[in-house]
Image (cartoon, rainbow, N blue to C red; front, side, top):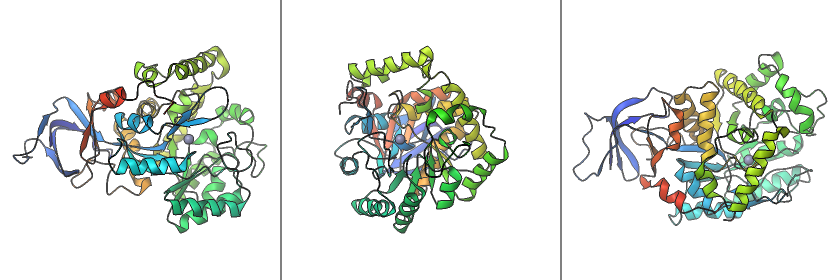
Length: 438
Ligand SMILES: [Zn+2]
């Protein structure tokens, strides 16, 4: 197949190239270059994509196959049917399930997708949350100490997971044991931290940190070792935190020196602002009526002032992310379809790109963060994440030009995974009214 006369944004951060042709053969990019110089073989099916743009498939680095089930208790239902389709329809061709509540389901979904029995992205399965005492949902196991941490990592590594995620109440001793066990298997550890500050975690050897500055508690004056302070105590002081101050700069350079990547999850934070994000028909269409009511109620409540400082938080987080990238840090992005339900699989990955641009990144930088950078952190940069000859044909065809209007990222015409084309409209149709039922 030949994608002809198309604008290419290749994921490396390079400027868009106009009037290109991409030849896809046996799942790979066989050629890419100026349309005038590329001659596809006679049997190739040609698609004239004049006016459209091709970017690499998005690499979602904080994804889940679950979503809040509503009803007032923190329980998450596995959306094994709808979420892989929502991701793929949104241009996400590779996704790390950053924290699993049903690790066997996630592992088996990966097998179903890889064997072609279900549509979905390439999944990279994270083990069950490594949480200490004080888990907020009964779906998480609470570690009983360092031995339990290494035992859990050993068991799930053998079952096939390829990463782990530490959670908010883990102790330093447990995190150290988990990192050592994971690294023995060549497996990376990330964390949504609270009981442990970023500098401590970097020193212990963590590979990646989720959410960024907004969850870093190390600047809280009352911080006790191994204890997660209540959010009510840290949130107001976060707004006053000066990114250019010595302690924050030291934390940033510590992360960079230890090669700790940061995962940006702007969309799930933004959802707590009742006036944002834009409310879309495709979003409400994917939900059950009950889930729509539940989300719209949470949104209305936020609008009445309960969490009106969400935008101030988001601006602070973006300031941190820009400083981290400027210092040489590896920033990746992901949807994190949790929170109040406003960040949905795939759609929130697209929203992240808009928010990164709103925060000062250029569109091509934002696209690199959401594609090549994720592939690099997965160790897959030689296979996908950029558009180049020999790479896997994981490609997103966009109606419009996201380099000029980043919101065009929502207008996806086709998604290719391993060279196979998918129609986003059909995928979305197939999951109407599904979330969070299945
Ligand atoms: Zn998460």
